[in-house]
Length: 254
Image (tube, rainbow, N blue to C red; front, side, top):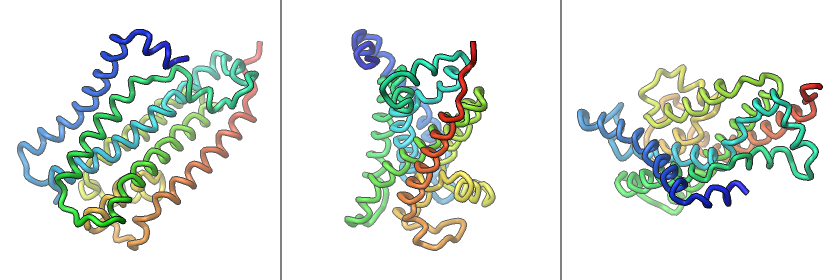
């Protein structure tokens, strides 16, 4: 329904999609301006930073396209309109994900994908079938990790209805952090996004393996391949928290 209503106004849809594309592109312009004054950033060249930018940007854009609308849950809890979703013969999670589905967000997916494609054509990597496979796996696992964080943040809103901005600070703030090399940040920060909120598995650890660079934390090499396991664990935790939140929901009363 939301897709049909969006494409019914084609000029508006095109302008909003282009705006989403340009908005994402301005972030990469910041990176280009930085490299107009330097040759490397913490030992990383422009194509290597573009690889980090493209992988985290594309992963977040995919998760935001599919599940970004779920952050509106707190508003529905506050005004009681979540009750409408509970009586429909469809999962509440699917309804919330489809609520006001914004097809214009595909502009961010395309923009990040173009940067990633350019980066992959420029980075110095000895490509093997395994390394080629790492790229789509990295994107899918990253999208799953971001999607799980969207879900966990929404589940928290069953109790704390105004938690959307806290959730966004971790998700979008983490995305900005992952656009830059881990060697830019203090090791305590890197440990936090590895062991506490495992955003490092979105692109830092697999990208370091792809580029043949050392892990700043000195972790065992097999940790770089834990992205699918971390994504699965986070998705399981998100599903459990969502079920607990739905069962704890008591409406707003009359």
